Image (cartoon, rainbow, N blue to C red; front, side, top):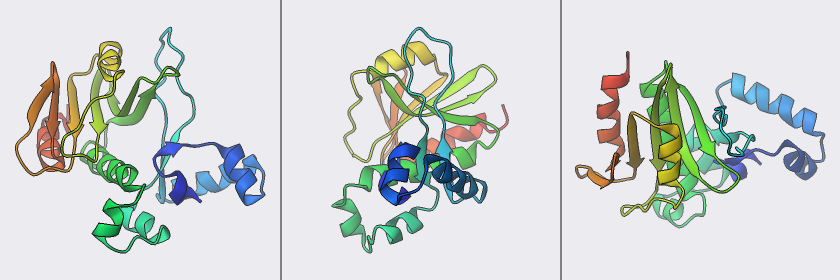
Amino acid sequence: MLAHYHGGLFNASKLGQSLDVSHNTVRKYLDIMEQSYMIRVLRPLEINLKKRLVKSPKVYLRDSGLLHSLLEIETMTALYGHPVFGASWEGWCLEQITAALPLWRPGFYRTSSGEEVDLVLERGRKRLVFEIKASLSPHLSRGFPGSLEVLKPEHARVVCPMDEAGYPLGPRVRVVGIDECLKELEDFAFT
């Protein structure tokens, strides 16, 4: 069931109804799976704003091969045509980025009005922002510039599946492939 919720907001009551168990049982199973590193529970940022923030965490299977196996996706062609492709790319990139910066606290930002950032890494007063898009020509959502104004990151990147050199997408925002992104993060690894 979690494979179908991969990258989405976690709702223990809804999942419990689907499995005919209580939401408390679902939460206990989720805790066990998180502690055994099978899943990542990405919690929303807790920042003091006047905006109403989403409080539900997002859930990802940490192993993209396991995700694809559970969803019976056996080839890259099948993955490209599957509705989970974007969430699969997001989860895989999230794992690569968080592994590169293990001392940084991961989270995501989403308001009830729809402003969203897929991944925000925090360490002290520093913030790094990542929007992850499974497109070679990514477009930012309407709320992304507003999110940058609120979060005031030192670094904002749109990560997409490209091999070429990155390019600017707007003020303070750059589109990069995952390899370029990870190379840039070497400067933040121990700061």
